[in-house]
Length: 362
Image (cartoon, rainbow, N blue to C red; front, side):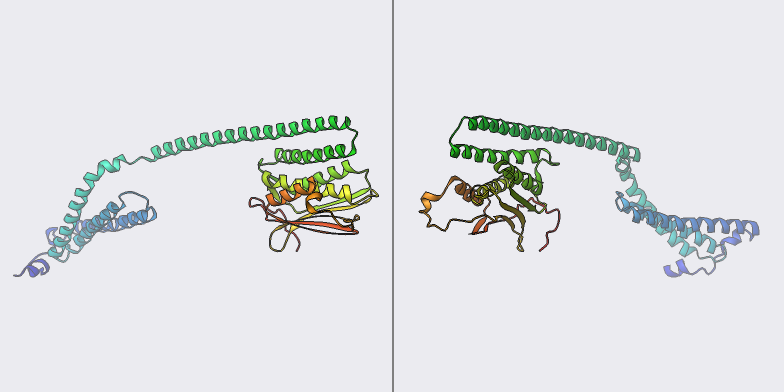
């Protein structure tokens, strides 16, 4: 007899039910028990496989699949036990038991060395404790950072406040000095210096009251700055119009831009209205290519038609300051002047950190 016949040919063998004398109660008991055990063994691996698939983060998940194979083999042996009650297929049953034995030995051989490693894995309670500790540590770090930022903000506000107060002190000294002067040109020069100091102080005031202490909206700044210049330089006969797009700017951009507006508006007040009446328009907008366009215009008498002296002799302090500020902003300036209109256009690149709060009509 070949080994194939020895395993697969049941001729001459009696089924297991014969050993039970075909007692209905015993046959039913064995068959029913093996059915229940076999079905359970077939369902458990499905549950394990589904769990491992849903939790790919579990370490040593491949061991679970070894258990799946082992339990399936065990369940199959119980189902074969039902068959051998009536059919003496003991060779096939033996082969299944051999596979089950191999899988059980492999599972045991792999499982025992893994037990220390698996036992070393943190429990759910330990993981929760670690999470709580790290959460508490992060909360502590966040609170420290909040305290540091609060201290920084307080320090910056104090710095801005002190700078503004010092500029006001300087302005008070200039007022006292101006009262001692009788020369109109000297008093006008001190007035121009006071206007420039006011522009610097106004920048620090805007930063001191801003939310992030880094940027502020340029629109209300330009309105207040221009109004102060006009109110302090005339008796109310010059009408002022200021239109500016909402634009957040920083210190490095606001100071030269504010000084530019100060110089241009002051020039209009000095030279455009010999009769003391007129209009000044200040506008800050965007060009179609994204640049910022500052326009200061008045409806005064314009430049004199008389021949101008050489450039070296006619450039005053205001013109020098304007040229320097435009260069600092890396911009360009174009001036148009005739009777009834003097218009200065300054184009500069928008500051990188600035953000437009509202869209500007084209």
